[in-house]
Length: 331
Image (tube, rainbow, N blue to C red; front, side):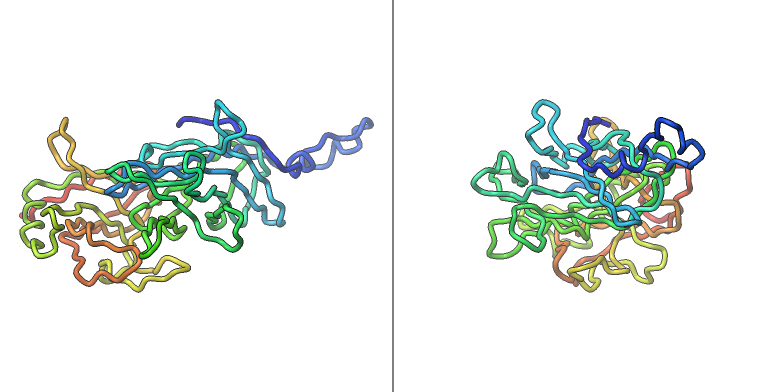
């Protein structure tokens, strides 16, 4: 990880761990347990973009008691600049660290929130934006109530144990980036973002055979892109989903139960001479993993009736072990 230094802007921690009096009257009073908290960001990439630059202004943790602990996130070489991260530079299990070993109270937390500086066409060098393959640029925004130029990505509760805790905010850009019609802005929706504990998650890595890729393209020639290309990807579903697909009911406020939990592009590795994929930060459990060549028609805002999965495998992720999966023609 590329660890960054940050500033604690809340006095809560100091109050909780204050020293005893001169007379040591508090020597016998149990002091709150302290946790060290590290937070990074990573992403599952999306095609058609050269950069997805997200500007992080701060990270806030809310304790079970309702107190907020806020850290400003700033560039190493200029503490006045919020941290800009190109998510496409940190794919798979590569992580950019926003916080490193910050001391906070151990225990349960209601939520964590990342405040993002929304894109502004008047100052794209300092605000969030995307860069297309043709070098054109559009602002990137996270919607929220209010109009102060700040968006919020808020994720559900978690636990910090006494000692070290390493977490990552994983952006599944295929699901979270939306290009609204008749708009000059790209929207980043929190529904494609998840918080994972690195100590409790594993990676799924694998390959897709050349023959299977060719067969998928032949079977789906009617939905090829205008230039004849296809979108090759793998989708991870819960084992409880009866029929994995991508025509689930789109919900603005939450991720549908039958939606994929994570996605990853299948890319050709010239050194290994094979097509490979990687899904990072997956909790142990039973899943269904599917390969498709129809990812190019996957619309995060619509039901994709033409979308199909070419091959589906049941898989089990075991604690402490990364999983390797190969998609090939059935024997």
